[in-house]
Amino acid sequence: MSVPARTVVLASRNPDKLRELREICAGLPLRVVAGSEVSGLPEVIEDGTTALGNATRKAVATAAYTGEIAVADDTTFQVRCLGGLPDIFASRFAGPQASYADNAALVLDLLRDVADEARDARFEASLVWVDPRPAPGLTAAGAAPEVHARWLHNPFAGPRVLPPGADAARYWNGRCDRRSTWADYQARAAAVARGWGVDADRVAGILQRLVQPYLAGGRPENAPPEAIRLPDTRLWTADGPDDLDSPEDLAMPAVLPPEAPGRALNAPTWLELAANGRLPGRIGREPLGNGGFGYDPIFVPVGQDRTLAELAAAEKHAISHRARALRRLFAAVGRIYGDG
Image 1: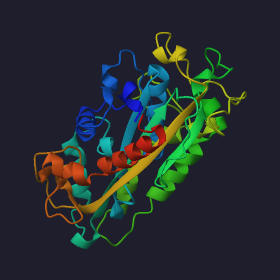
Image 2: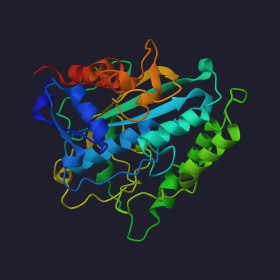
Image 3: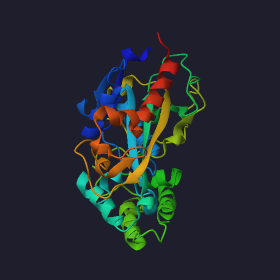
Image 4: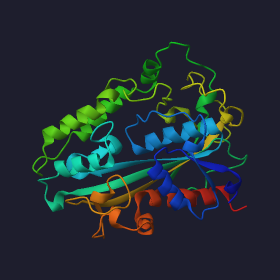
């Protein structure tokens, strides 16, 4: 493919995810750089209600800043009898400073009285590829049905900038009301099935703690003050690679730092590819294994009698949600970008 001449920046700052993504990418003809190695790369507020929404935010911001292809991922962990929780809150289910062990212990505690047949769970990963300067003539015709392709206007090249002191949160809520989106999310997640041995009131209290910062419509309390906040990036969807008419009534989500290399490199329209991968399984009774990270020690994949943390790295990569999404994504990249 023609991509090897281009750098691919992995937008994740999680060292465990970066290690795993690099292991999965090993052998691919790509120059992979971690976002943590890019000086000045801004953080992004992950306030989307889906893994895809958060991965897209990270990929768009990384591509905008670096001028390079960005690949971002986000993962949810969904337990059926918990109404789908921890979901997008997987990394902070037990609190903003929670460790992997804290989060897993909370899930096990909530499921303490749940029978084996009701302990279904799954991992779901969304991976997003954003090319901020696609080659002339490039089309997305080679994307497979399981890979979503779209073109979008450069969100950071709009003609309008919010003046200093403007209430940016109010502006973006007016364009795409995040408060109502989060209220809908809370209503769906609160539908915990009673009768499975779960303390539904306790789960509802945890959910309220998790969503409260977003229901307020502003920035989460633990968000760095310099972090970029992106609304739903579908606001910048373009009709195709030649659609240069960026929406004139949209302000830029944030002004890129002056030192951002992408300011002078990025094209008016960008190519975005997105793929999902799922791994179904069940919650065990205790943490087992020393490999992996996150919820791996308590998750037993379908067809296995060992947790993900008990599998060797090669075994995990053969079946994992992240690997499945990445294989789909890079198969589409190979078809779209060609072999020469």
